[in-house]
Length: 131
Ligand code: FES
Image (tube, rainbow, N blue to C red):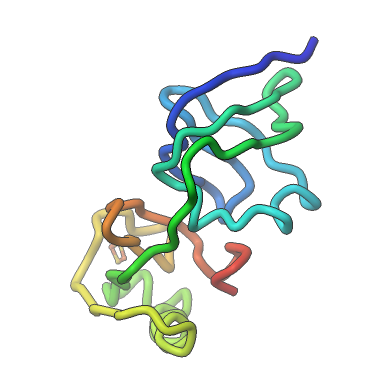
């Protein structure tokens, strides 16, 4: 059965494969993931249509804005997963990048914190729009 929800999108997990709204997470299929300007809709109010835990459609209710800056973790674990290359890619995309010591989410790297929303994105190498 399809549900329609309204709320603020608080983030994405597992490289954009799960969308987080409040306490719920929803699976995002490949086609929808590619269509979403996901970094721009974090923090926006949106209307979601979901079937079970699978996201079927998203309608942003606020005008989405993109991130302005990124804190890229340069801790040992994140460097092993390609944090240096991630930082360079983000700089080439025009983001202001600050390299930081650790974002306390070791093991899910490379990790990036997008500002101003302070949204931490794990496994950024898999995230659409940042890959
Ligand atoms: S090493 Fe990156 S979060 Fe800790």
